[in-house]
Image 1 (cartoon, rainbow, N blue to C red):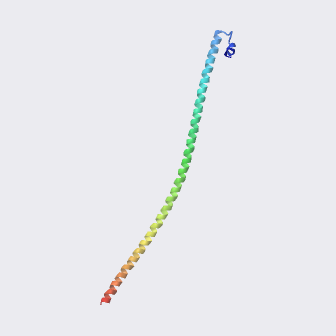
Image 2 (cartoon, one colour):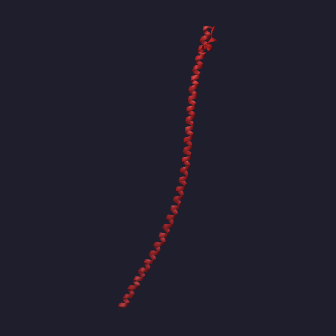
Image 3 (cartoon, rainbow, N blue to C red):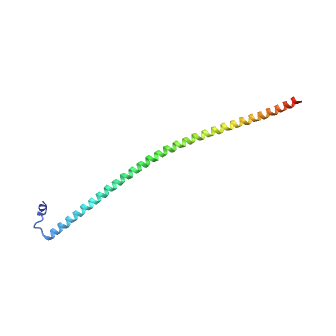
Length: 120
């Protein structure tokens, strides 16, 4: 079949044939260049999709971390309130202990005094 493709060139001058050959070479060169650029384009599109996926994953991870951070902050607030309540309860109990300790001392002194009176 290639002979039919070349048949139209018969009878053309050498100069014209040379120009046709140059143009065919240029067409082949442009086809190869187009294929290379197409490959580059496809590679760049694949890299872009990969980057988009990476960005989406990072956004999702950021949102997850943000929710986790919010949850931890709420937990810290809750623990701080519990700590304050326990601290307050401790102060109340310490003052009760001090009061009862004072009462105990007072009662001991009263008992000692009564014992002294009984001995007399």
